[in-house]
Image (cartoon, rainbow, N blue to C red; front, side):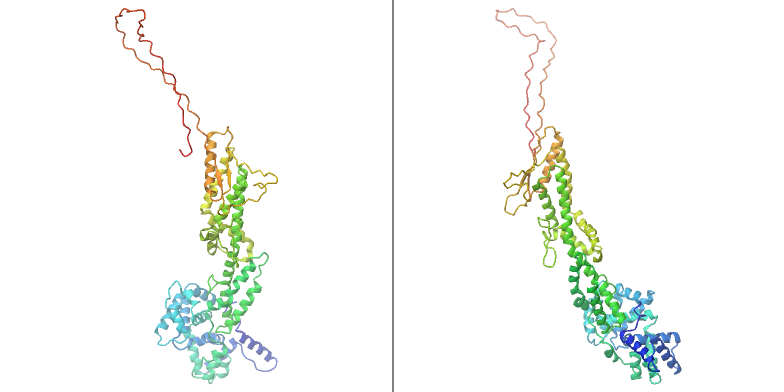
Length: 573
């Protein structure tokens, strides 16, 4: 229902109900707003004071006077006329942007164009010689007014209720299709016929009664008898009554099967409406105010009670979601390792320890929490858990009413932190290393427990306690039939794991296989080209022991083959 065309305030509805009862008992009754406005218009016209706009506009203005006396009072507030300024700027913006309903006007002013309203108010306050409370606080609060903080100031600074009251009345004028000047003109006209039309003016409600009582002057004293004109700033009310309920409701909603908001929210909303209804707002406007605080619209854009509960519920759910995500990842890596001959519990536990540490969890995969359920991430803000928590306000947060969907939604938030992390690069290296180790028929032999003794098998694995020695395992690659290339790849893969796990495990990797000796090197025989044979005069032997010279075509035998000893290649050379 439109706030400006809905039921009259509670007091007026009771008066209407009383009038219906009186119809059964007496010949006279109090007229409704429309009938009262038509009767008042008839009297004004009969006394020659009809406005130029005609009967239709006159009746509409008088109906507005009957149903919105607070707005009428704001139009005749003495300087500095903050309500009139806010009302006039609101109507002007709505006219310029072709807004014709209360909701469209309110959404636009509170959501986007609060700055022109506050700018005009600030100018009026700056020009006023004296500024009474609470406008003095309002003036101080507007000292740092800027385009990007107008909406926040509108709902937080003391005295802003005077401005928001003017905005509400301006949007009510827009909804009625009226201008402020038209209402002021009608008020002046009714003052001129106050004595002649007393009876019908009194039927217009508090504003009409005030006009009839004082005749030539418009009285605003009736406001104090109808409603307390001051209410606390919206933000102050929210902080006092709505905000303290966020934690309790979120703690409840995080429990399985507890999704009912009504027992908490309805009493808060009812109390809120009653408060603003009795403090300078009509009940229909009070409903809009409290809807805004509850749903995060209008004066509380995206920062109402619902958003606060949703956010807190997510914050409480994030640690558990991070635990589940990290444990799944650790189990996955353990399965991969076991499927590739690396099932020793010390190694799989070390893989898990690296994952848990990077997520900010304990070695057992738990997120430490304080007494309120807030995670105390190990590693602080650098942990993936903290980064996932920080990303929650920017995520599209669903209502806790569909808490089951949080697992999927939160997994996407956590995956966003994980996918850009150094941990992902480690896991990818591990997954590339596993099959290389298996292909070379390498393995870490499982620990064998001797019955009656303490061993690894059958004993829960433990992560190193600070100050104690790291657990150790060794990778064995003993199959001589494995090609050298496969063995070398397995050794490199093992060294990758060794580096990544070094804080939790000493992983010994085999040395590369020595290179095979090079083949024997034979020195080819030296071939000499004999010079042309020249006639040689043979000297006669001097004795029988003389040794003849070798023939030139019989070269000396080649030297024996030389075997080279090849030095094996050492790791790192």
